[in-house]
Each structure stands twice: as structure tokens, then as C-alpha cells.
Image (cartoon, rainbow, N blue to C red):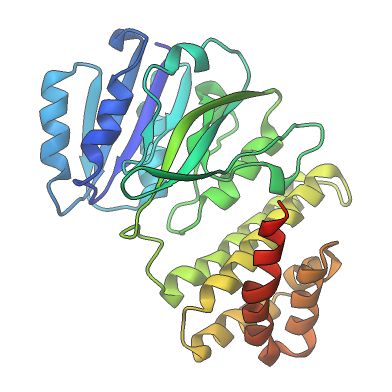
Length: 320
């Protein structure tokens, strides 16, 4: 079997059929790939949709469990997958029809392809994937989402590459770690994945308990630096940039919270001297400023972040 498509399913009855149809309308025989759809305790009608499709299509396997979260659901999919490659697809997204024949048939540990970011109603807004290589890995040039990669199953299993369970934003730790272990990589300049901007996504509600996970993920990446890198080597710098990216994202998202909760997040990051130092050492002026403010004037961070959102980021996007 060439491929195992793993689809975690939670509360997506409005989008699930489009996702499943895109996976079924392909240009290789259904016998050559399996679709493993895992119902993660959905309270809506998602399970009924899955069972209806499984009755009609023999290559669809439906598993059901109490709600355990995205990471645990994907990890269960890895455990039962039989395909040579694994593709993680989110159940509110969709893929290009008739794309499998051109994305399979390779031998690399990881195969990356292009995708587009879209809003509700299939309005495609922008490309989100750039160049990347194992020789010069750079966090700004990869897509963190595992949904735009095919992973060789034996590569994941042999290196015990699993998602950290119990945390949001787990992709930010998982994908860079995969790059660290990959011995071979192929980039396909072919658009096959479409990411839907779903306002009902579990990570979109502004809650401190979720946004705090940006910091927790940064701590996990810090562990990877200590376990898998030598100071100053390319993977050390790669993981440091990952930390800068996830912490900076968390800071900006916290602006949607009350000021008291913003300060809780900033002070948590400030309390980690290693992460604060990584921010201050970063070559980008904006990240240096955040690191300096964390150390010396944490009270000024919300003001600086709002100025950055209003002035710096729009200007940078204008000249891309």
C-alpha cells in the first residue's frame, strides 16, 4: 500500500464531506491507499458522516475514541497505518483532486508540496510555503503544518517521531524535529493542499490557557536543542529560530486577552532566562527589542507589540 491518509475528526460536520470527497477523487486505485478517519469524540454529526462513507468505500477505516486531542489522534493513526507514506490531513481542509499519482513514487523521508491558505467559502488568499533544504534549514522557509508533507512511515516509526500530547500548537515542535532527523528530503512545486481558515477551530478562541501553550512548546523545543544539537551548529540555530517564532506568535495573540493575562504570559517567558536570551541574540531588530523589554521593561511590551502590529508588520508585508 502506497499511502495512509490520517484524518483526525472533531466537530467538523459542515466541512467533512468536502475533505473526504477530495481524498477519494484521486487518480490512483482506492486499493493503493487507505483513509484512516479517527473520530475524536465529536459531539456533532461527524461520526454518522464517517460511517456512511466507510460503508460505501472499502479504503476508509473509521476509528472512534473519547476526546483526546489532535496529537493523540494523529499518534493513533501512525500506530495503525500500513502505507509506505503517511499524510496528515485536517478534516476541515481539502486536497487537490487527482494529485496522488504525482506526489507518490519517491523514496525520501519527507516530501513537501505547495499549498494555499483559504477562508471559508474556498476563497484562496495567499501561498504559504517557501523554499527549504536540509543543508540550510531555516524556520522562515518551511511550513510548520505537517499537512503539507508526506512522511515515510518507517522514518516516523524508527525515529519515534510522535506529536507531543496534551499541548496546543504541537506542529511547531513536531515539524522542526522531523527535519532534524530526516536523511533525505524532496520539495515538489505543486499546489495540492488547501488550508481553510475555520473560525470554529479549537485554537482560535482567545484564552490564556491555550495561548500559554506557545510558551510550553518553546520549552519543549529548548529540550530538543539540548538533546539533538551542538552549540552553534545549523540545527541549534534552526531550533532557536523556532523558539523565536512560537514565542513571538504567542505574544501577539495574547494582545487579544485582558492586560492582566497578557502580563502573565510575558512574565512566564521572562522567567525563562534561556528563552529570553535567545530572543535578545536574534538578528532581527524586532525580536531583539522584545528580548530587551522582557528583561528590563516588561510593562512596555504590550505597547511595543501593538506598534509592531500597526506599523512594522503591514510595511513588511507591503514589500514582500
